[in-house]
Every structure is written in C-alpha cells, then in structure tokens.
Length: 151
Image (cartoon, rainbow, N blue to C red; front, side, top):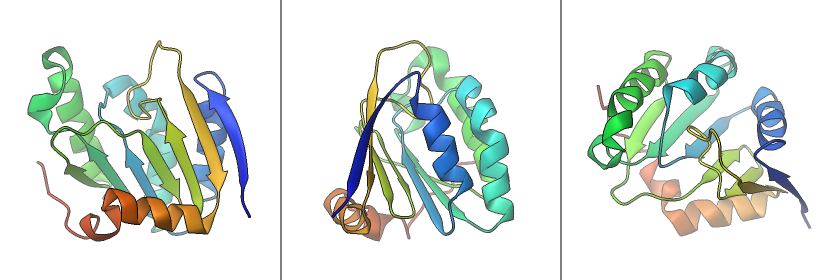
C-alpha cells in the first residue's frame, strides 16, 4: 500500500523541501539540467542535510550536453554541490526527472535543479517498495556507488 499526490510547478518545491528537511539517510536527485538560480534556492537545505550526514547524490547530463548558454551555471552549481559533499555523476543522454528521499519517490516532468518558468507536474509516492523498484529499474542501485568526481 502507498499514498500518492500530484503537484505542479507552484506547489512542488514547498512539499519537496519538507521531504528534504525530514530526510534521514539518502537523497537522490535526477535532473538533466542544473541552474545557478535553482541551486542557490536549494543550497541551504542541502547544506543542512550534509551536516546531518545525509547522503546526497545528483545525476545529471554531462556538461557538454547542457545548453551552451547555461554551461557556466551548471559548472558553478556542480562545484558548489561538491564543495559540501554532494556526490555528482553524469549519464549520457540523461532526461529523467526523479527524486528519492528515503522512502519517498518523486517523478514527473519537472527538472528539479533547474525549473524556472514552465508548466510541469510531479507525483509524490510514499512507498519503500516503489523506491526500490525505481532504483533497480534505473540502475541507480548499483551506479550510485560509482560516482564521478567532476571538478
């Protein structure tokens, strides 16, 4: 049994940050794009998680697959995340938009680390079983152990 709720671009971040604040062990964020503006908005909560020893893993596109106009922002944001101990790795052709916060799975169309001005949706599912299924399906269960240091 699990619970599920839908969120849009206006309601997502408040609920997501609440989940982040309650994280106990692991946060995984898959976001193909990363912008400075979004990282600045999330950095304080991510920093608090790292101080509590919560493991944070980010999967994104390789830098050369980011929009050339946003390359410098992505490079800066990755450096900021790595400076506080966030593990960042890259997947060629990446386009998934998922987050896992312990036993909560977020999935949908919203680029979590870059969303700015678009109409999006995310579904929040509270289910340890569905989190495990997503980790197996995406290969994150194995790949999270093998992160790539980017900078």
